Image (cartoon, rainbow, N blue to C red; front, side, top):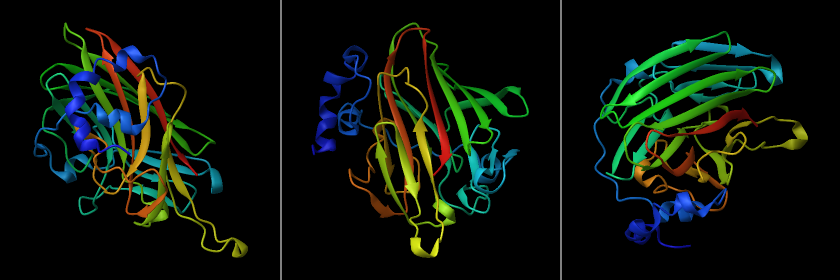
Length: 290
C-alpha cells in the first residue's frame, strides 16, 4: 500500500487525468494519490441545534420492511431506522457526535465546502427547497463564491427499506474544474457505537454482527451504496475510523484499511471528475438496511 501523504505531491500529474482515463472505477489509493493538500478546516457557520433539527419525516412499511428517516432544512438525513426498532443513524440532537451529509472540494483552488449536520464549512449559501411530494424532497444550494450548485433529490423507496439520494453538481464558471464529491454518514448500527465495517468499489457498509445465530438473535446494519453507474469517472467506497465527516480535499485521510474493521466508524462514498464549464455530473446512491 502506498503512503498516501507522500502521494499528495503527485497531485499535479493526476487531476486532469481522471477525466481522460475512461475507467469506471479506481481504487481508493489511486483517488487519494490525486488529492490536494487540504486547507485548514473552517469554523461551522451554524449552530448544531439549527442544522441538525429533523424537519421532515418519512415512514413506510412494517416489521422487516419498516423505514423511517428525517431530513434537515439543508438536506441532511440525521435519523434513519430500519427495520422497526433498530436505529442506524441518529443525530437529531446537538449533544450527539457525528452526522450525515455532503462535501465538495474544488481542486483548482483548492477549496473545501461541506455540510455534515453537526457543522458546515461556512462557505455555502442558503438552501432552497425546490419541490416536495409525499415521497421526495428536492433541494438546491450554491457555494458562497458562486462556483458550484449542488442539487439533491431525496426519495423514499417504499417496500425496500432504502432511501435514494440523487446529487447533481454543476460547475457555474467559464472554465473546467476538477471536483471531489463525497457523501458521508456516521452509522451506529442498531444504535451501537462500535460496529464492523468495510467498503467496496460501490459502497460502504457498517453492521452489527449477530452474537448467537443459534439463538436467532437478530442484528442489522446500513449500506451506503451506488445505484447504477455514476457520471463521475472515478469513485470508491470506504469506512473511516472517526465519527466526523472527511475533509473533502483529503477524503481518505481516516480510511480504516482494506480489511473489515471493528471500531466506531463512519461511511463515505467519494467521487472525482473534471466538470466542464457550465456543465454538471450526477451520482445516485442509497441508504439501505442490511
